Image (cartoon, rainbow, N blue to C red; front, side, top):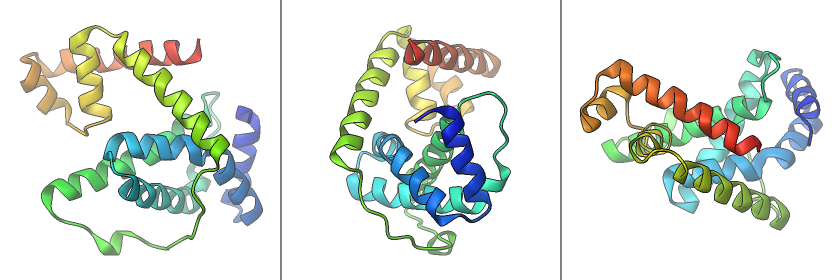
Length: 180
């Protein structure tokens, strides 16, 4: 699905158009599930995180701004952050039941969506493996394992601003690799 079509679906979702929301779910759930699964490494937890992410998308679609960048970046960020929040809660032993505003019953990804997600995941792993070893591990630590910049700076024994630069450059390299 094209960027413009996804942007239109988000705009219609902001107007509480359930048909558009269902179409948005069908078009993007495979990728968002793959993101959640990669972060949480547990199918059940990833399904729950993806459901929470779509609740957030429904509730915050009016905040999306068309800026020329991919709307998938906005959607993936919501899914990734939701999964990271669940991972952190799981690590601390705390689950905030009140954080879930609404429960939506949603089917899992179709076989086609699962295949697309698997293909994208393989491509992402290949791109991550192509980064410099330390920078690749830093990107994985920040965006997959949910470590803070300060934790990563300590882990790699570099200044905080150096870590920020590593992550920014790593993301730029990933974006270029994924679009190739």
